[in-house]
Image 1: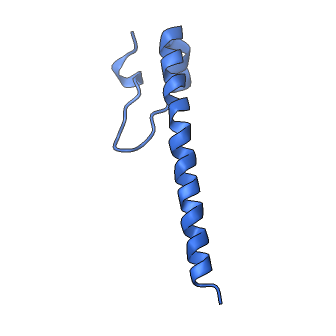
Image 2: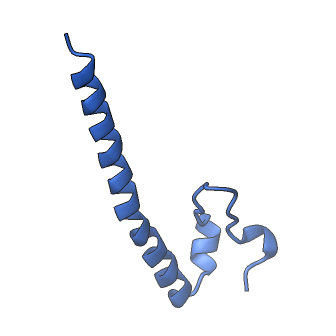
Amino acid sequence: MQAEEERPRQTGDQPVFLSATALERAGIEELQGYRAALLAELPRIDAEIDAKRNRRGAANALFKF
């Protein structure tokens, strides 16, 4: 069991990353769950990048002389 100060904490929308020590102490199932959670975030990140690129492109087209 991890000590309280080594457990990942989420603050607002900030991502939670495990320290090297926490990764070393985590079990296989915990690591697999952590990996799955990180991989699940990738489509959301990609969608946000695409949306921002689209907005930038629209703004550039609007203000292009």
